[in-house]
Image 1 (tube, rainbow, N blue to C red):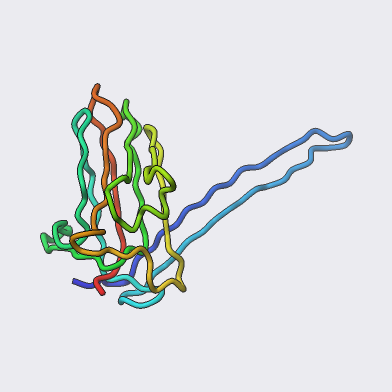
Image 2: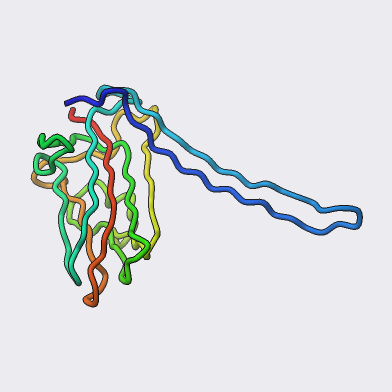
Length: 171
C-alpha cells in the first residue's frame, strides 16, 4: 500500500539571546530548522511505507521491533521496510523511567547510535532522524540479520510509554 502523497520529517529549534546596552537592548535570534518532504515512491527523496504506534513497556521490559515483515500498518497490512528514511521516537512526559533505543545486534542503527549503540530518551524527550532528500539508500534493513530496532525500559519500577513513527521504502 503506497503513501498517497509522501511523508514529511521536520524539526525546529529557536531562541533569542538578549543583552542590555546603554541605549537599548541587543537581540540575536537563533533558529535551526530542517525538514524533509518525501514524495511517494522508492528512490531518492521518496518513501512508500510508514508505520506508527503508541507502545507501552512493562518495568524492565524490552522489545525488538522487527522492521521486515512483522509490523502492521493502520489498515492491518504487513509492513516490510528495505530502507528507513525517517524515524521519530518520543518518550511520554509522564514516564518515570527512561526509554532506551538501540542495542539490537547487527542493525543499521549502530552507526547512528554511537559506541554503545543506544540512545537514552528521558521522560518527555524525543529524537527525529531524517536521511536527507538526496539519499536514496537511507538506513538499510536486512531481513534476518539487520532488521531489529530494540526499545527498552531503563528500570524495574514502572512502565514506560513511547510514540514511534518510521518512514521508509519497500525496495
